[in-house]
View: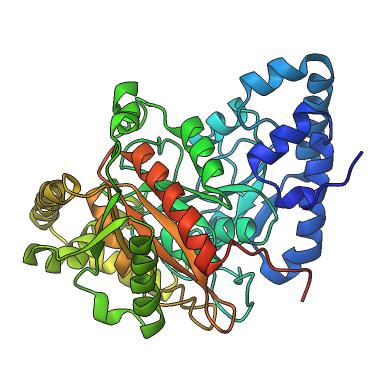
Length: 465
């Protein structure tokens, strides 16, 4: 067997499938490469709350046996055949504990599993384990470190999922975003992080924070892998009241294209531009210039003044929803509540139903206002974060550049745009029109091919420190 240029755990899903097709790789070899990387790096990165190694090995053996007998049929039927994947520890998973980042839920098992977990298994993926999240995916960081520099945060709340993919432990991971918990850690860790349109991926079996804001999110080291994972998970599900759509809705984005005309992007600095560090402002503008030199039209677009209120609306919806589902923690004297989480819960308790309804009306207004922008532009280019990953593990960073797009339920993707002089990743967001997820991902692929020539490709940290 000819040795691949890359270690097996570095391969994309398509590269794995290419090797499986010609019998140049087994599922067990792929799994062992991931496990070896975890064994080498987990003590430093601490991305996982639980690893299901024995069951993963058994499943890998089963897939290898199936491939021996029906290789072509298996590869055609299972788009994620044998791919090890990490799942954020807010998704119910049969046979694995689901602890929501809270010590009070330690070693808790559910008798059902989340829709995304079922869909992953049905696509042939191997759920390798559960990854670290902040407390209730909201506050109080876990132990996970940034793979590029352990003194810095990986971001939150999908800390472990972003770090596991960035470190080469798994090719793919599942996270969630209520404000900025996919795009931000993806930017800090230097990978692709995709938050699809609101309602396109079922949240059944996912711990709720805010029904108005919660999204399932995806992490990968290639955009093709993001596309594949999205295709597996974008399914209507009556168990999630916001995930009831016809397949026509999901496919609609495929028909939207720029034809022979140039791609048009709107550079949106948002009302929070001054909160971005100089390195972020410089790099995002530079990215816009690089794309402009490649015949992509990039215009500076200013949001209407109504958007100045957006961050307050995001926080209102988040706090209200958090209290509705988890407010009992405030009155349970025997249950310790982390201080930051307690502040969020108390804020939610103070929000009236009428204030919540008003916030929902603002959300609808913002969606309407964005429509005119997306009739002129294929996507919006905007910062992912205020800066590179902050020093220390307690501060998981600000989601202020992500919250608006989460609020409006539009698809948003972190694109890596190089590194600081100290080796910390930087990212920018591409944001698309609601339900035009496919179009956004297609635009992103074209932009990425241009940007990586200037800023460099994704880097996996080398070896143990």
